[in-house]
Image (tube, rainbow, N blue to C red; front, side, top):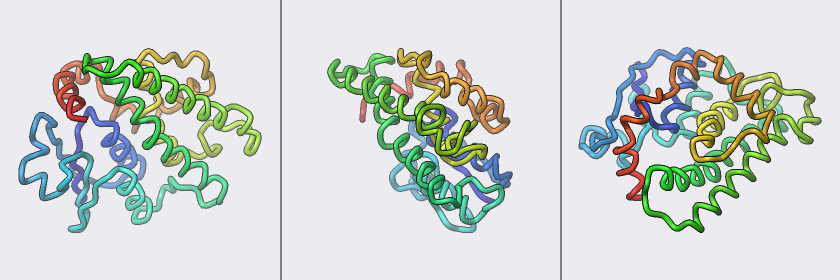
Length: 225
Protein backbone atom coordinates (compact mmCIF):
# COMPACT_ATOMS: atom_id res chain seq x y z
CA UNK A 1 0.00 0.00 0.00
CA UNK A 2 1.15 3.53 -0.77
CA UNK A 3 2.68 5.30 2.24
CA UNK A 4 1.98 9.01 2.63
CA UNK A 5 4.27 11.05 4.89
CA UNK A 6 2.70 14.37 5.81
CA UNK A 7 2.08 17.10 8.37
CA UNK A 8 -1.42 18.37 9.07
CA UNK A 9 -0.33 22.04 9.01
CA UNK A 10 1.47 21.74 5.67
CA UNK A 11 -0.23 23.12 2.54
CA UNK A 12 2.22 21.08 0.48
CA UNK A 13 1.01 17.96 2.27
CA UNK A 14 -2.63 18.95 1.98
CA UNK A 15 -2.60 19.08 -1.83
CA UNK A 16 -1.23 15.54 -2.02
CA UNK A 17 -3.73 14.37 0.60
CA UNK A 18 -6.61 15.90 -1.35
CA UNK A 19 -5.43 14.19 -4.54
CA UNK A 20 -5.22 10.82 -2.83
CA UNK A 21 -8.79 11.23 -1.57
CA UNK A 22 -10.16 12.54 -4.86
CA UNK A 23 -8.67 9.58 -6.71
CA UNK A 24 -9.73 7.18 -3.93
CA UNK A 25 -6.24 5.71 -3.72
CA UNK A 26 -5.72 3.48 -0.67
CA UNK A 27 -2.84 4.77 1.43
CA UNK A 28 -1.22 4.50 4.81
CA UNK A 29 -1.02 7.96 6.43
CA UNK A 30 2.16 8.61 8.40
CA UNK A 31 2.34 11.89 10.30
CA UNK A 32 5.75 13.55 10.50
CA UNK A 33 5.93 15.92 13.47
CA UNK A 34 7.76 19.02 12.30
CA UNK A 35 9.24 19.68 15.75
CA UNK A 36 12.27 17.63 14.71
CA UNK A 37 11.01 14.29 13.48
CA UNK A 38 11.71 15.34 9.88
CA UNK A 39 15.45 15.42 10.71
CA UNK A 40 15.61 11.90 12.09
CA UNK A 41 17.33 9.19 10.10
CA UNK A 42 14.16 7.20 9.41
CA UNK A 43 12.49 10.05 7.52
CA UNK A 44 15.75 11.35 6.01
CA UNK A 45 16.05 7.95 4.32
CA UNK A 46 12.72 8.71 2.64
CA UNK A 47 13.45 12.35 1.81
CA UNK A 48 17.04 13.55 2.21
CA UNK A 49 15.75 17.14 1.96
CA UNK A 50 13.88 16.49 5.22
CA UNK A 51 10.59 18.03 4.08
CA UNK A 52 7.01 16.85 3.78
CA UNK A 53 5.20 15.55 1.86
CA UNK A 54 6.69 12.33 0.56
CA UNK A 55 5.23 9.08 -0.66
CA UNK A 56 6.56 5.57 -1.10
CA UNK A 57 4.66 3.49 -3.67
CA UNK A 58 5.80 0.04 -4.76
CA UNK A 59 9.24 0.84 -3.40
CA UNK A 60 9.49 4.14 -5.28
CA UNK A 61 10.02 7.19 -3.07
CA UNK A 62 8.88 10.57 -4.36
CA UNK A 63 8.97 13.99 -2.75
CA UNK A 64 8.07 17.54 -3.85
CA UNK A 65 4.31 17.94 -4.09
CA UNK A 66 4.01 18.66 -7.83
CA UNK A 67 6.17 15.66 -8.66
CA UNK A 68 3.93 13.50 -6.48
CA UNK A 69 0.80 14.87 -8.17
CA UNK A 70 2.26 14.12 -11.62
CA UNK A 71 3.06 10.58 -10.53
CA UNK A 72 -0.38 9.97 -9.05
CA UNK A 73 -2.06 11.32 -12.19
CA UNK A 74 0.01 9.04 -14.44
CA UNK A 75 -0.38 5.88 -12.36
CA UNK A 76 -3.96 6.45 -11.20
CA UNK A 77 -5.61 8.31 -14.12
CA UNK A 78 -9.20 7.91 -12.92
CA UNK A 79 -10.68 10.31 -12.09
CA UNK A 80 -8.71 12.55 -14.40
CA UNK A 81 -7.33 15.63 -12.68
CA UNK A 82 -5.14 16.93 -15.50
CA UNK A 83 -6.95 18.13 -18.65
CA UNK A 84 -6.01 16.68 -22.02
CA UNK A 85 -7.03 19.72 -24.11
CA UNK A 86 -3.99 21.90 -24.75
CA UNK A 87 -5.53 25.19 -23.67
CA UNK A 88 -6.92 23.76 -20.44
CA UNK A 89 -3.71 21.86 -19.77
CA UNK A 90 -1.74 25.08 -20.12
CA UNK A 91 -4.06 26.91 -17.72
CA UNK A 92 -3.91 24.10 -15.14
CA UNK A 93 -0.11 24.06 -15.28
CA UNK A 94 0.15 27.85 -15.21
CA UNK A 95 -2.12 28.21 -12.16
CA UNK A 96 -0.28 25.42 -10.32
CA UNK A 97 3.20 26.80 -11.00
CA UNK A 98 2.26 30.40 -10.16
CA UNK A 99 0.70 29.20 -6.92
CA UNK A 100 3.88 27.44 -5.84
CA UNK A 101 6.57 29.75 -7.20
CA UNK A 102 4.88 33.12 -6.67
CA UNK A 103 1.97 32.97 -4.22
CA UNK A 104 3.47 30.55 -1.72
CA UNK A 105 6.72 32.55 -1.24
CA UNK A 106 4.65 35.71 -0.76
CA UNK A 107 2.50 33.89 1.79
CA UNK A 108 5.62 32.73 3.66
CA UNK A 109 6.87 36.31 3.89
CA UNK A 110 3.50 37.52 5.17
CA UNK A 111 3.40 34.60 7.61
CA UNK A 112 6.65 35.74 9.14
CA UNK A 113 5.18 39.13 9.92
CA UNK A 114 2.00 37.56 11.29
CA UNK A 115 3.74 35.36 13.86
CA UNK A 116 6.42 37.82 14.88
CA UNK A 117 9.50 36.75 12.92
CA UNK A 118 11.74 39.76 12.33
CA UNK A 119 11.52 40.84 8.68
CA UNK A 120 12.14 43.92 6.56
CA UNK A 121 8.86 45.89 6.17
CA UNK A 122 9.77 46.54 2.53
CA UNK A 123 9.76 42.81 1.86
CA UNK A 124 6.35 42.52 3.50
CA UNK A 125 4.86 45.26 1.32
CA UNK A 126 6.34 43.73 -1.84
CA UNK A 127 4.90 40.35 -0.85
CA UNK A 128 1.48 41.91 -0.26
CA UNK A 129 1.54 43.60 -3.67
CA UNK A 130 2.66 40.38 -5.34
CA UNK A 131 -0.07 38.37 -3.66
CA UNK A 132 -2.75 40.84 -4.77
CA UNK A 133 -1.45 40.80 -8.35
CA UNK A 134 -1.67 37.00 -8.37
CA UNK A 135 -5.14 37.02 -6.85
CA UNK A 136 -6.32 39.45 -9.52
CA UNK A 137 -4.93 37.18 -12.23
CA UNK A 138 -6.70 34.20 -10.67
CA UNK A 139 -9.91 36.24 -10.45
CA UNK A 140 -9.63 37.21 -14.12
CA UNK A 141 -8.96 33.60 -15.06
CA UNK A 142 -11.91 32.10 -13.24
CA UNK A 143 -14.46 34.90 -13.48
CA UNK A 144 -13.10 37.81 -15.47
CA UNK A 145 -12.13 38.61 -19.04
CA UNK A 146 -10.18 35.40 -19.55
CA UNK A 147 -13.24 33.32 -18.69
CA UNK A 148 -14.74 34.23 -22.06
CA UNK A 149 -12.57 31.48 -23.51
CA UNK A 150 -14.72 28.85 -21.84
CA UNK A 151 -17.75 30.77 -20.57
CA UNK A 152 -18.78 30.69 -16.93
CA UNK A 153 -16.60 28.24 -15.07
CA UNK A 154 -16.91 26.86 -11.58
CA UNK A 155 -13.26 25.81 -11.70
CA UNK A 156 -10.15 27.22 -13.34
CA UNK A 157 -10.44 25.25 -16.57
CA UNK A 158 -14.22 25.01 -16.80
CA UNK A 159 -16.68 22.56 -15.30
CA UNK A 160 -14.01 20.04 -14.34
CA UNK A 161 -12.14 20.04 -11.03
CA UNK A 162 -8.41 19.74 -11.72
CA UNK A 163 -4.94 19.88 -10.22
CA UNK A 164 -5.05 23.68 -10.61
CA UNK A 165 -7.94 23.88 -8.14
CA UNK A 166 -6.13 21.60 -5.70
CA UNK A 167 -2.83 23.48 -5.76
CA UNK A 168 -4.30 26.99 -5.68
CA UNK A 169 -7.03 25.87 -3.31
CA UNK A 170 -4.53 24.95 -0.60
CA UNK A 171 -3.07 28.48 -0.68
CA UNK A 172 -5.59 31.13 -1.74
CA UNK A 173 -8.02 30.76 1.20
CA UNK A 174 -5.20 31.38 3.69
CA UNK A 175 -4.33 34.88 2.44
CA UNK A 176 -7.15 36.35 4.51
CA UNK A 177 -5.13 35.47 7.63
CA UNK A 178 -2.40 37.84 6.43
CA UNK A 179 -4.62 40.89 6.19
CA UNK A 180 -5.38 40.54 2.48
CA UNK A 181 -9.09 41.04 1.85
CA UNK A 182 -10.79 38.80 -0.67
CA UNK A 183 -13.78 41.15 -0.97
CA UNK A 184 -12.53 42.43 -4.33
CA UNK A 185 -12.44 38.91 -5.75
CA UNK A 186 -16.04 37.62 -5.93
CA UNK A 187 -15.15 34.91 -8.40
CA UNK A 188 -12.48 33.53 -6.10
CA UNK A 189 -14.81 33.76 -3.11
CA UNK A 190 -17.41 31.67 -4.93
CA UNK A 191 -14.69 29.22 -5.97
CA UNK A 192 -13.40 28.92 -2.39
CA UNK A 193 -16.92 28.20 -1.18
CA UNK A 194 -17.29 25.57 -3.88
CA UNK A 195 -14.06 23.89 -2.82
CA UNK A 196 -15.08 23.94 0.83
CA UNK A 197 -18.06 21.75 -0.04
CA UNK A 198 -15.84 18.97 -1.38
CA UNK A 199 -15.27 16.15 1.09
CA UNK A 200 -11.54 16.07 0.30
CA UNK A 201 -11.12 19.70 1.36
CA UNK A 202 -13.29 19.32 4.45
CA UNK A 203 -11.36 16.26 5.57
CA UNK A 204 -7.90 17.78 5.11
CA UNK A 205 -8.43 21.37 6.24
CA UNK A 206 -6.32 22.28 9.29
CA UNK A 207 -8.42 23.13 12.32
CA UNK A 208 -7.99 26.54 13.99
CA UNK A 209 -6.97 24.73 17.17
CA UNK A 210 -4.37 22.73 15.25
CA UNK A 211 -2.93 25.84 13.64
CA UNK A 212 -2.79 27.65 16.98
CA UNK A 213 -1.01 24.73 18.62
CA UNK A 214 1.48 24.57 15.76
CA UNK A 215 2.44 28.27 15.82
CA UNK A 216 5.64 27.79 17.87
CA UNK A 217 6.79 25.09 15.43
CA UNK A 218 5.84 27.19 12.43
CA UNK A 219 7.73 30.17 13.83
CA UNK A 220 10.81 28.05 14.40
CA UNK A 221 10.71 26.78 10.82
CA UNK A 222 10.19 30.23 9.32
CA UNK A 223 13.07 31.70 11.30
CA UNK A 224 15.42 29.44 9.33
CA UNK A 225 14.08 30.52 5.90
